[in-house]
Image (cartoon, rainbow, N blue to C red; front, side, top):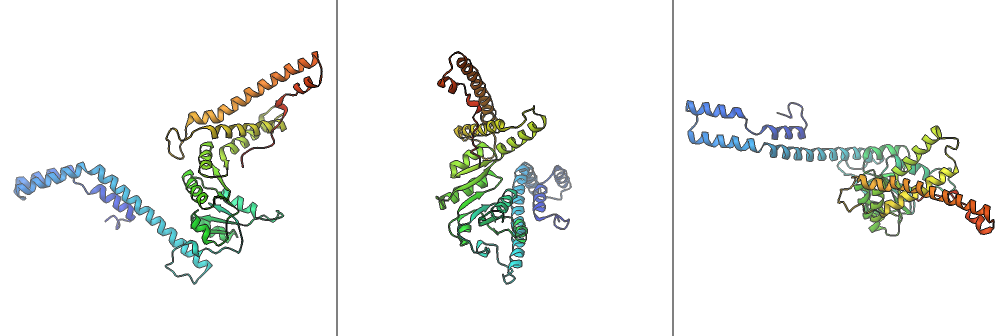
Length: 350
């Protein structure tokens, strides 16, 4: 009846499990049936017991119905993606049989050797692919992108990107026939997906550098332990860009100068250093979760430590200047140069 009412299979199953048990009105009906002698007394007792058991089982039946409905939803979504991908394949090659499932063997890429493999073709992967293949480069870099979303694969191929359908696994990369990758870049948003990809690909290609995007220092630390050669921490880069914009608008006369660039570079280095020292797995929290105390130690603590260090260096510089006035010589002159004036040359963030 649920299907006739327009419900999806998952919704019909979920509703069926919720309505399968007896209700309080069943006791009224059974009592009336006993009084009228419609049902034998023994059968009436059995039916009352069945109704009571079904009422107690309602929460469990509801949970099982929800689980089974979710399973059907996932299966339906996978079937839909399979069907969409078949359409994509038939656009590229009309001779592909109608029932053929998407597979890495069906992917066709131009001839290339040792390309960069981009795992995940969201916004980050799209920007990277555009820069790697830019004609403005003296030597454009070959790449192949891999994604599990048929819509993205279809649209990106129409735009001219070199992208294939598949998961970030050694099997998919080997099926491309392009040799050992020059580098592998993981651009997934979910840390669990990134960890799975890094672990598999590092085991298959131990000599190939793997670059991964991380949400914060916790994710970066876990990815590096899993085998990533370098990580780009999105929160660090976003915080730096936001701070620069704010200071350029509301800052004092200096606003954002070379000294501030040096300070920011050093701050990012200190944040990354603290982040790698922390044992993020000690509290047993799941992937993707946060630990406010450790976050404050890494981000806020690094900022305060940097400010305190600069204050001490400036104070030492003033003392050195006073010594220079009393007894000028070469050693005093070297002491008079505060280390705060030295700017770092860059950041560890890729």
